[in-house]
Each structure stands twice: as C-alpha cells, then as structure tokens.
Amino acid sequence: MDGPIDLLEEAIHLLRRTSAITYAYYIVGVTPFAILLFQLLGDASYHRYLSEHLGDSVIRLALSYCWMKGFQALACQRLLASYSGEPIRRRGPFALLQLWAAQCAIQPWGILAKPMAFLLVVPAPFVDAFFYTASIVITGNRGGFLRCVQLSKSPIGPGLILNGMTFAFRLVIFVCVYSTLAALPFLCKMLFGIETLLTHNFHWLVSIPFVGGTGFVSYLLIDLLLKSFYVIRLRRIECETSGKDLLHRLAGLGYAIETK
Image 1 (cartoon, rainbow, N blue to C red):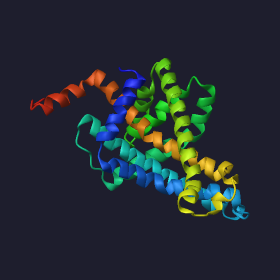
Image 2 (cartoon, rainbow, N blue to C red):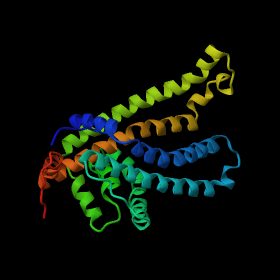
Image 3 (cartoon, rainbow, N blue to C red):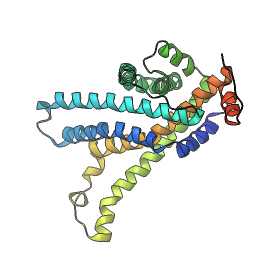
Image 4 (cartoon, rainbow, N blue to C red):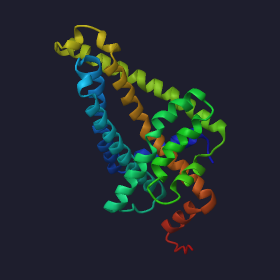
C-alpha cells in the first residue's frame, strides 16, 4: 500500500472529482451542530443566566451531533462510491434509521477516546483510524464493528506519520482561519469606514467563543479530507484480497466479469 503522503494526495483528487451532493450532505449535517455549538460557547461567556437553560442547550447540541454524524456517514458512502465506481446504493427509511442508530452508538465515544489516545501518543493512530473507518463501515449491518476493528489495524510508523502531518496541518489551518477572521472587522473599518463593537477593543480575540469557533472551523476544513483518506485506505485494503479494483477496471473496458 502507498504511504500516507501518497494517499493524502489521492484523497485531494477524490474530493475534487466527487459530486456536489457529497458536500451537500456534509454541510447539511455540520451546520446545525456548528450553530448550536457557537450559541452555547457565546452563552457560556456572556449569558449570566446560562445555568437556567443549560440542560436544554446540551440536549439540542447532542441531538445535532447525532444528526451530523449520520450525514457524515452518508457523505462517506458517496465518497466510497465515487472512488470505486460502484453505483450508489439507495437506502430505505429503515436502512437510514439503522445507519443513524449505529453511528450514534459508536461516534460519541470518540469525544473521550481521541483526546486520551492523543495524550498517550502510541494508540492514537489506531483510535483515529477506528472512528474514521466507523463512519464508512458501520451502517448497522451485522459484523460491521469487527470489520471496522480489523480494517483499523495498521503499522504504528505510518500511523504516527499521518497523525503528525495532520496535527501540523491543523495548526496551520487554525492560524490562517484565526488571522483571517480577526482581520476582517478592522479591514472593513479601514476600507469602508464600518464601525462595529469588534473594532473598539481586542478582548474578543482571546474569548472562548472566538477561539473555540475558530478551532471548530479549522477542524471541519480538514475533516472531510481525512474521511476521503480513509475511504481510499479502506478500498485499498479490500482490493489487496478481493481484486475489486481490477474487476471494476475490466468492467469499465467492456469485459463481462462473472463473480461468485
């Protein structure tokens, strides 16, 4: 199998040629969660009566998180179909509910597991691979969990290289997004004479909503790229034993292939 750098380059090309529906699924899933997260961060910083409606805010945020993970799984299915050339499988209401329930049962554990694995360093590649692969593999069908565990296993060296590259890339993206958003109010003042509350002081630049929101936006900018990376990795692992890539290429050339 190719190294992490080669797979990341291929993942970028996959995102360039995938359909707009893939991005639509991802945006529709992420938007409610992002809005509610920013609202909660803002209330936590400036709202003196947050404790009175904190429970409702957390419940809405948890539901929007499950909503987001379901749509991200659908986006991964479309990425997988775009990469493999297979027709996109249409899911009925029961299959969609099954997929959503499976993602809601697995993905919240990543909120605790990923930071702990990051601090311990060594298990981080396996944990990250597991939860990204879970977005692709776990659809509610029997055996999906064990298959996800098997596909997440990989040599520790390439995994650490990928995690190091991802961490550095996230820092660069965070700095770019932070500096861009921080400069916008002052650029509007300099170029158009628009005065806002943001141009009167600099305290908002270190506030929890601004820093947390910038970090979340930076995370989203690279999250779909990593999902594309693991889609390609998953298909490469499967093709090493099944030869599906060769069958699809022969079918594209007009050869009729009989599979048992």
